[in-house]
Length: 144
Ligand code: RB5
Image (cartoon, rainbow, N blue to C red):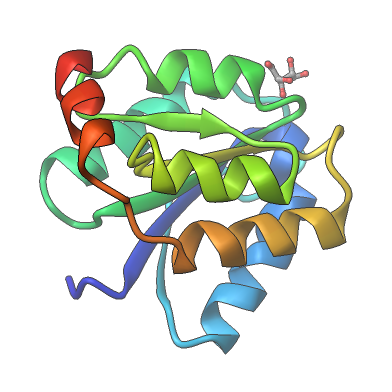
């Protein structure tokens, strides 16, 4: 898949936010690998963090978005995989810093804690911000 492909996954707590963000991504030219969940039925967030980790590992995507009710559970689950740097973000500053300083490859948000316009803004910033490298590269290297 092309570098302009992004994966997105959520549990039932993030389903509305997923639908909203998929529309934005598609409208801005991204090809979206939607890993589910696809409906309101209760599911387990670690299963969707695993799907994301697999998509990053096998090279289908270089970036992803994960959503659950708070963003907490799915970020804990995603960060159990060494190649995943999942950042739980609540505002524009966090979205910028997680790329610039942490080279986050997965943006995480809470569908029940973050409003739709803030979420859209965070996603845009996450996608547009480059990793700054330098001293931050040394620190990120120490994560693995
Ligand atoms: C599901 O009810 C909820 O626990 C989940 O979406 C998430 O918030 C967990 O961290």
